[in-house]
Image 1 (cartoon, rainbow, N blue to C red):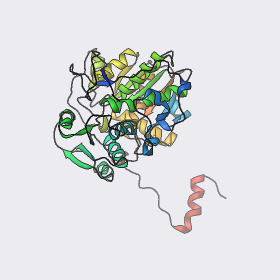
Image 2: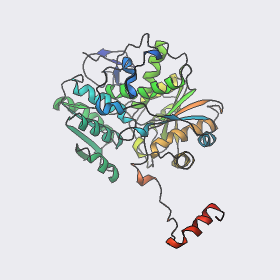
Image 3: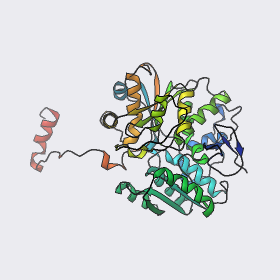
Image 4: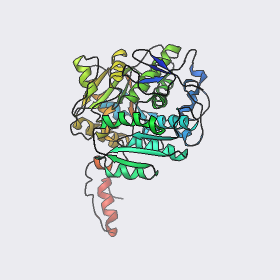
Length: 402
């Protein structure tokens, strides 16, 4: 079986297992959604119910846990954002983020010999994709090498290391590291499942498939998600294009992508009316895992936002903290700071009048906060009580005596 690739920009096609077109833009896998209807969804678990829209069949094992994440609502979050918010809980995945969708499909393709001549896998990541790739590679018994920036938080290193990959911290420009691994991977027989390569994008498009099926026969007015490399954004856009082409959805939701203000090259290009995204100098932000100064699929994400009538916006660290806090104390959901940008961005566009209070918005919470203790804020000292005084304490706590 050959997995054909097509450039979203110039339309060039190839059967070679490449990630980039000769024109410089990223490729994605060529699929034929013609005739797809929601009735075509199978009874397979998770994202594999959309097998007819995916390039490979369900491999079983841990891949069965990819996808199928909850879409929930909470009145307090609606009040916070000022509109009807449907929260997509991607932190429910085995390694706690949406990256498991792309890892499940990509690793399965490599194991089945559908990803070229590589017999090992690798990735470049700030954390989530490294954990995910290492975990799914371990389950498939594939050698795995992971390159991470040398400023990655120590708690993330420990989580990645438990899957026993070859874990390497690298000093140097992150964007160059991304490009170098794709180039060197072909020389060394390693399939690098980096953030926006075609196989990963195919897995990540299932986020939008699940959202749209949940709203069928309608669609949400908008989908809001964090953007870093542009890979997830590309997958969501690809899914919407395929569903619309097939006639499974009549309207295409607006796509809003959110970046941290300290590192927002795609948002800056959107605001400037530019046709392409150019690299920036990254500033400090608590949303470090989306602080990508040179996003490889930035221009593709830019086009996705424009073609769907959406936007790319940048939110401050204060807005991110407020959204993260609201999710925790109002909805009982812990998310990483980068994930909280989805809710912060939703609130912002409502305040700006771009989204109406009566609209229905799917906000994709891309990852759990359980791996990110360093950004959760300093804990309060709490109270202390002697055992005999418990009753007195609880009386004060509840505001009434027994």
